[in-house]
Amino acid sequence: MKKVITLTLLLIVFISACQEDKLSDVLKPKVKIVINGIRLEYTQSTVPVHKKFVFKIIALYNDNTEKELSDVELVGNINWSRSVGDVAMEVYPDLDVKMLSFSDLGSVTVKAEFLHNNRRFYAEYTFDVVSPSLVSIDILPDVSNSNVAACCPDLVPGAGYITQGCLRQYIAVGTYDNDVTADLTDVGGDEGAIVWSSANPEIGLPTASSQDVNYTNHALTCTGGLEKSGLFYAASSGRFSIIAQIGNVVGRSGEIVVNLPSLRSFEIDQKNYRIIEEQGLKYTATGLFDNEATNDITESVEWKLSD
Image (cartoon, rainbow, N blue to C red; front, top):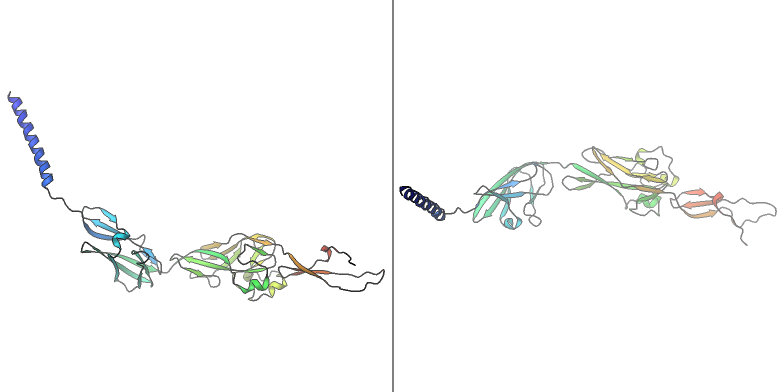
């Protein structure tokens, strides 16, 4: 009987303690989860001059959790400034409230001010603003170049083919890691001078480094001169591609087809001559081709008498 009473009392005490714990949890004031601070995040500590980049802004909460703030939460509540450095800074609120760029070289510390529930939170990030680096080269036909019209009137601007014996001007467009592009055809870039070459020089080759080539007469008379950077000569029918290199950055064109020239017209050098009976008269035919070249086609012409 005593054992039963003892167990009953212990059970009552245990239940009472559990109820007190639950009551304590109910009465205990709950801690409100609020922002304690912010942190700026970016992928690196250097950024090329004029490059537009976007920060991540991380909210730090009092329960040791964190979350990236959305544009909706930031619009109208974020301000940017410099706390260290004189580097000019641009902000692009119309594109992205977290987007910035720098216009000068040097070291700079960016300061973000975030307004939330009448409280202000601050975070900083230090950059070294550096010169941009060349990352790629694109090779394109120069459709505006006057040499094209002077040498090959029938050449289609921008087409991936060229007629044998013709010249065509190409341009090199460099893209930098700040997303800026520049024409590098003549001067190259800070990394060094541009070097033009051909993957198949027997078919097409750069004129600036190929002065010993037996150019056609019309190619030699083209305006601008053969020494122009990016000017290529179609020496033989076939396929080739153009290579442009600055330092370790190499650009390569698509495949360019060199076609044999097509006959545009021809002339006969003897006209309305009276032929003496039982005597012959030699005629020759000279063809004019679409690469402005002329050639004796006497043996290729089908000759007929007309009344």
